[in-house]
Figure 1 (cartoon, rainbow, N blue to C red):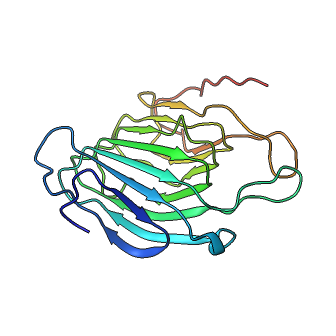
Figure 2 (figure 1 turned 180 degrees about the horizontal axis):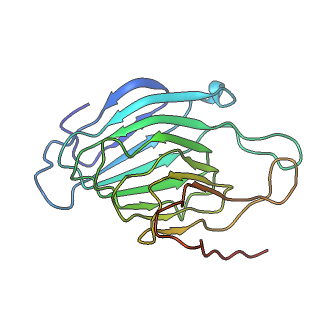
Figure 3 (figure 1 turned 180 degrees about the vertical axis):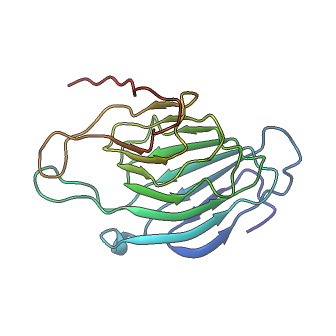
Length: 196
């Protein structure tokens, strides 16, 4: 898909999806991609292998909806998986909204300037399986039980707010998880806060 102006790009399940703007020469270009599902497939695991947003895009607005939701005490929801986001050095902001669980496996490899990930309005469970090396990142998640893998990329310059928690499908207290290697990273401790 190319020559996009203000249209919303809807994607259900796919391999490589290329979605590029008609004009990305500005300094505040944005693209909106809606991850969804056909009604008959909401309970099936679905994957988009790679979302390539081209060059020159500063902001990607990504939503995830339409998948089977968690039923507390009965069953877990079904997640949508996005294998990779491929932008370039222009992409600085990723906004995530919606309510369906979402796994993003690789958002760091092709996006060396992606400093801000804002999922504060996202109510599903969010999994970010990597981060951008050598970049101070501000990552905010929402009301789901979220997981972020920082690896050796976590430094004292990063700001991470894991938001609130919902209960799990089995009715137990939810939790957020950060996985990081803090050895020799100049971090003496990780400060955190929580509320019940």
